Length: 555
Image (cartoon, rainbow, N blue to C red; front, side, top):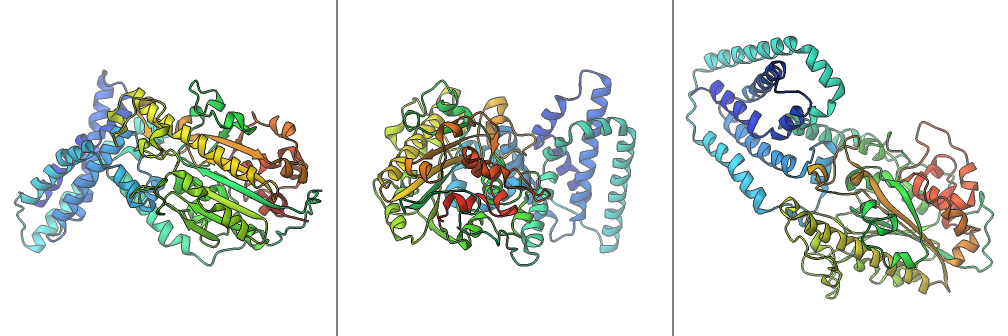
C-alpha cells in the first residue's frame, strides 16, 4: 500500500476506537435516533478522519512516517484508557501533573487493566503498522501524491464543515468542552501549550519581587506581646481530601473523631483554587486569584513565602509528597518522604507522621517567628490503601487495586475514608505537638487540602478535570484552623467571633486579584483575620503586606 492509504486506515481506526469518550459525550447532546442526528454524526466522523489523515500525511516522509504513526497509536490508546476508565481530561494542567509527578506516584497508575488496554488498542495496531509494506515512489511523484491527498482531505473537511456549520456553531458555543475530548489532537495541542509556557514564556525575565514593604512591626494590628513568646504557624497543605468525606462537614461516617474534640474552627464552604496539585499549590501562595492565575504569570513573581522570609519570618517547607511545585525554591525545604524511620516508613514511602519527625528541633533552631508548611501525602490516589497504617483500616473491606474503577463502590469508599481517618489523626497529633509547646510559643495550625477527589460519581475518578467542568467533589475542600490560647490573646482573636464565619464561602485564593486595589479594612476585622489568611492569600502583599507579617510578626 502507499503512504496515503496507511494514513487513512490509521485515521479510520483511531476515530472510533480511541475516541469513545468523545462519542459518548457527543451522543448525550445529539439525538442519533433521528436522520439529522445520524447524518451529523457521520459528518463529524468524516471530518475527524480527514483532519487526522492530513496530520499523518504531513509526517509521511519515509524515515519518520511509521515511527510517528506508532507513537500516535500508542499515545491514543493510553489517553483513551484514562478518558474512558477515569473520566480524565488531558488538558495543559493534567500534562503538568504528569511531567511533575514522581516515580512512585506514576507507578501507582500502572495496572493490569491499563496494560491489557494498551496491548489491545495500542501495541497490536502499532505492530500492524510496523509490519505493513509501504510502497514509495520517486521523490517528485511521492511529493505530488502527498500534496494532492492533503488538498483533497482539506477540501472534503471544508465542505463538510460548511454543510453542517449551523449544527457546529450551536454545539460549539454550548459545549466547548468537546474539543478537549478529541484524541489525540487535543492532548497533543495541550502538550504544546504546556511546553510553550514552561520553557519559553515562563522564563521571560527575572523573578519580580512583590511586597517590598512587608515588615514585622504590628503596623496594622494592635497586638500584645507581653508574654514575649515567639509565634509558630503550621500550615498543613492536604492532598486530595474532599470536604464531603469529613464528618465535621456532615458526612455520615465518623472520619474526624479526633478533630471533633480539638476545638477547631471548621470552614464548611471552602473551595480549591484548582483541581490538581500542580495548579492549586502555587496558586495558594501566589498573589493572583484563580481567574488570573496561570503558571506563566505566577512563575514570574515571588510568592508569599518569599515575602515572609524577607520580612524576617523563618520559613520552612517539609514535604512528604512530590515536591512544592516551585513554591519553596527560595526558602528552606526538607524532603522527608525518603527518610529511614522504620515505624513510619517502608522502602517505598512514608506515612504523613514523618512530617512531625524532628520538628521540635527545627522550631528550637529558629531564631525568629516561624512559618512551617507541611505538605501531606494525604489521600493521594489511586492506591488509597497505601496512604495509612493498617491500624487505621477501620472501614473494611478496602479496595487494594491500583485501578479504583475495578473495585466495588463500598470498598473504594472504605479505602478512601481510611485515608481521611488517618489525616484526622495526623492533624490531631500536629495540634498536640503545638499544645506541648504552649509554654514557649504562641501557635496556630491551618489546614487546607489542595483539591478534592472523584470516587466514581458519574463515572469520574481521581481529579484534574478543567475547573469549569470539575464536579464539587474535586473543587470543595476541607479547611480547618486551630488557635492556641496564647495566640488568641496575643493577637486579640476571638474564637467565638471567628466561629461565626464557619459557613461563609472561603477559598485558597486571595480575594483581591492583580487587577484590583485592596484596602486594609478586612485585615482590621480581627475575628476574620485567619479566614483572610486562607481565603485571600497574599492580598496582604498587594495592598501593603498586611496579613502575614502581622499574623506571624512581633512588635
